[in-house]
Length: 110
Image (cartoon, rainbow, N blue to C red; front, side, top):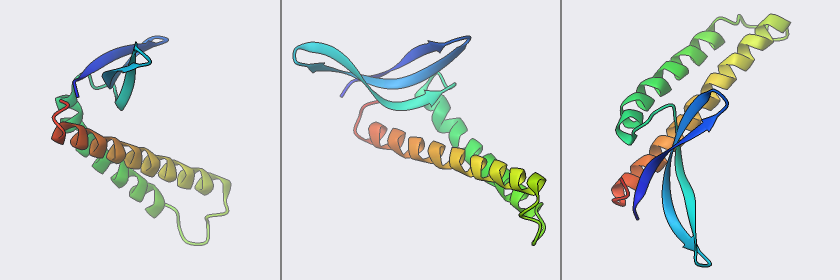
């Protein structure tokens, strides 16, 4: 499997994807293996994602800890809990991508 990083432009932003070429019914097609986001290299993603995951999880815990027991029904605290859940979801997503990237690397794709 030969994989490479491709740059995608969306509006004013640039994103990177790890893709592989395949032929489907004789036509070349690219399959996205992992979305790298702002990281232009696989090594950069490997280096930064674990730190980002830890940062997001700490932030989510800090947000949850800031909500006192019994106040979860107040609008401002509901928003804080939503932010905490959003940080956790982003961390989970990065962790999933990191595992995919490790699997691709182990298979010799990058």
